[in-house]
Image (cartoon, rainbow, N blue to C red; front, top):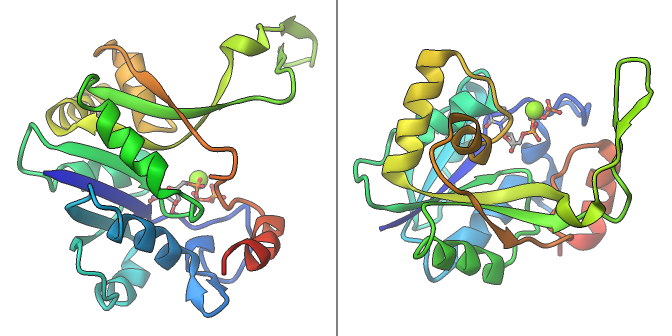
Amino acid sequence: MNYAIILASGKGERCGLDVPKQFAKINGKTILEYTIEAFNKNELTDRIILVTSKAYLEFCKKLKYEKIFMVTEGGKRRQDSSRIGVNLIEEDDAKVLIHDGARPYIKNELINNCYIALDKFSAINTGVETADTIMEVDENKIIKKIPNRKNLLRCQTPQGFISGLIKKAHKIALKKNLNVTDDAGLIVNLGLGDVFVVDGDIENIKITYKDDIIKAKEKLR
Ligand code: CTP
Ligand code: MG
């Protein structure tokens, strides 16, 4: 069974709209619906788990996509929302992709590549090269390190896991009070195995700022 968990429980504070960014309407449809559509029509996805906030539960429950399996209320941090999502999966041998609801440009081929990579690896991330050189600085803005750009990739979603592994990681993280920004980070931080990086897509951006909303009106048709 292949699951896609779509995270849509954030507030979108950096975007500063009067609704969370994933519920902003672009050409008559919410950003979240574009994201759901991508997984709903993906041939390898069997079930979609949608994680959203209390205020949008009713809205989300009314969405008509045949692969939506469950709609549930998320948590305070992204990490909490994703833990709640993965814990709804009973099987330990399912493939699960976790994707930001705020990444509506996700392409079918990338979704497929993620599931396929899970035939070989128990944990995968998607990443893209960085055009700019990245520098590590200290609190006084003095450069500490300039890692080789070739070894640096920017993290995106989907991230993918065998369900038993990611459930275990979240369980340990909760016990240890671990804070991470994404699920692949859990596996790395807890030393639970290798995380393979699937080539991401520079167009698969996360709607974050107001400007991204303006551009979305052009890009999402
Ligand atoms: N997310 C979630 N539950 C949370 C926080 C975030 O499901 N408690 C989701 C968001 O809805 C988004 C994805 O995780 O689809 C990536 O998070 P981010 O881009 O940080 O979204 P927000 O937290 O909503 O935005 P901001 O950080 O600007 O407030
Ligand atoms: Mg956030």
